Length: 168
Image (cartoon, rainbow, N blue to C red; front, top):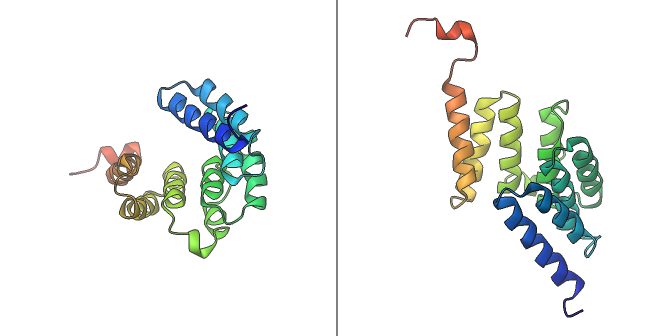
């Protein structure tokens, strides 16, 4: 073999990302999992393995893997962001925030993941606040701007059917 294990990991990870962006979710997940074999003790590899299961809809398995990675790499932003994204709705939002080391609380990957979870839980003002933080740190991320727009839109929409019948 010409490539080192690290190079194989990087190549497979990049290939997985390309598959994901093309909508080839099964291939992307398979490549993320395969890539981990070449860097089994790497935080990104473990996070991507959990992400792979999330991509194919195996949320419980994704959270188990992300939880194990979080205990090994408790100060890894990528691991914590994947753990937050994989957290089931039964996980209290305060728990998601409480485990964050103070230095990572403003990391854009983490604030984006927290914003997504707040949005899922109907915490629109919190979701907007977190999306704004992410957008300030990473104005080049188009996804963050889309997320922020969704937060603003949902916070402005009526929350119940009865709200639609009220005076304007």
